[in-house]
Structure formats: structure tokens, C-alpha cells
Length: 416
Image (tube, rainbow, N blue to C red; front, side):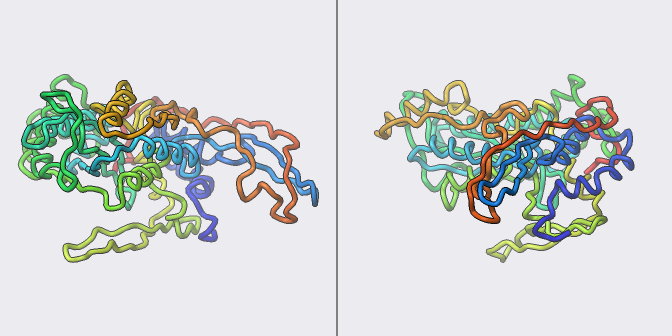
């Protein structure tokens, strides 16, 4: 297929049936639903509308989107509105972009226990940042932030980490008055990493003690308590990767970057360079060397089955939220916090948070309404005349894929 036309949907439509047959009985319902949704997206299966040209009489079909949160082509408007809503909330204070990553041995546990481990990740990251900010040595403030879960690296491997956008400002823990911290420094990354590591491992050990963790596949040996605690001890003995810097181009740029993934998934269609039916090639960023200032880029080629397998590694359990606000910016108090902050800072007005609900159910986010003519199709591409709606295209439900018992646990053959 031509590079400019290839995308995840085309790969799934061509290679998906063979992959499902090959993996029969080893894909859970969640992954089967994602595959079916992406394959049907913006096709006659989902229905749509026919627009006619008043000039030349040609008809132009516009098909409905699947609105699945894992579809790379859907929810672009929702992502735009989410980033605009966050931008409207920005305060004239220093912001920091913090990234906290789980080490490989802990990520392996998380792969089969996503709901539990990702819940611990969100909880302990928020607690880490709140605790350190409340320390008088690091500002003595009650703060908040927005955390976004990513589960991939540039090569689509399983690599769970949180991106957190944190304003270095908050309410003084003693006086309760609004105060602003340093514009150049949030906290030592070693201090952040050390506390994050301790809190996370303590919570993980508690979850294990309560029987909330399951061990299968490559981590089956961790069902032995001795092996499990030895793995925790090894993770405790080394530094955990934490990044914390003020965004070079401002917090609005970070939110726009995160929005590309909050309402989509690990890879965009634009990164796919070729699909030959049996192999897929895509661009990826290479890790920077110690003496390199700019990132390097390369192209990776994998089999179509391997590409689909890697893509499906990042399907989240139903109902799991990948965006969470915490502290003084939590959903329940964010409006009051922003009002108090603007009053203290002398800002005029308080923009309404009219953006997308971060945690809206699958397929119900604002901006996913039935498609209207896109900018390129407001006029006929052939003669330039206006288009008008003439009739609906009825929805045709595809045959359901064979069902499998729902599970948060990855099945054999889907390990990272």
C-alpha cells in the first residue's frame, strides 16, 4: 500500500482476520472489541451520511467513526478540546513536566495486573508530589497536578510511565495563603525517585498480601512469596527513573503533546511508513546518547502479526481512566482552587472548564458526534460547489467475533 494511505485501520482490516485465527482463544473480549471497532471505523458498517454536490451532482459519503478510545483516527476533536480546556486553566505560575517510570521487573508484574498496578501508580505518584511539595524545604505548599498514563515506548513495547504537569504553586500548609514556588526548580529528582520507589513498593507488597495480584506466563514464578519479595528487593536496590523539568515551550505545549495520546493510542497513522501485507514499517525515535543534543530517528520493520500484537499490548481494561487530576486540582475542587489562585494573583476572570470530560465513558466523549462535512469537503473537491445532506446511510452491525471470557490478565501470546 502507498505510504500516504496506510494506517492502523488498513493493517487491521488486511491482517486482523488471520491474526484472530492464529490467536483463537488467546485474545480477551477487550482486545477483540478494539480490533473490530478499528476495522469498522469510518466504513459503511457504522453507517453515515451522503452529501451531494449542487454543481456536478456527485455524491460524497461520510461514514461514522467508531469512537473507540484506542482508535488512532478517532476523537481528534475531543483531544483538541481537552488541551484547550487545560490551557484555559493555566495560571501565571511556573509549571513543571514530571515523568515517573516503572522499572522493567515491576512493569512485568503490571502487565498482568493492570487495574491494580496502574491504580497504585497513580496513587503513589500523587502522594509523592504532594508530600515533597508540603515539606518546608521544598516549598511547604499543598499542590495538585494532572497525570496522564502512557504504557508504550517508541517501538510500541510495554513501558508504563506517568506524565504529570505540575504547577509549582499552591496553598501554604501553615497559613493557607496562595504562594508561588521557584521558577527553575521543583525538587531533586533523586528525592522524588526515592520516595516514589518506597511508596510504590509498599503499596505493591500490600496488594500482594491481600491476594490482589495474579502471576502468569513469564512472571509465574512470582507466585512464590520468596521470589516475589526478592524481586521487590532488587527493585528497591536501584534508582528509579524520574524526569522533572520546566517545559521549554511552556505548559500549554505539554498539554497539546499529551492530548495527542490521551484520546488515542501509542502510534499515529503518520508514523507508519509502509505496509506490504506481511510486514509493517514505522518511524521511531531512538534514545539519545550522552553527548547527543538532538534525538535520532529510525525505521523499524516487523511482521503484521507482531505489529498488531504490540498495538494490543496497550489496550486498557474497560472503565480504566488514563487521565487523573489530584490534590488541589482534583475534579471536586479544581474550580474553587483556580478561583482562589486568580484572586490572589490578581488575574481577571476565570475561564469556564467547558472542555471534554476527561473520564467520559468509551464512545461518549464530547466531539464524537455524527460526522459533518470536513473542512476539505465543505465544497465539492471536483467542482467547488456547496455540498448538502441528502440521506443517511444505515448502520450495519458486523458479525460479532467469537467471545472470550473477560479478563484483565493478558493471554498467552500477548506478552511484551
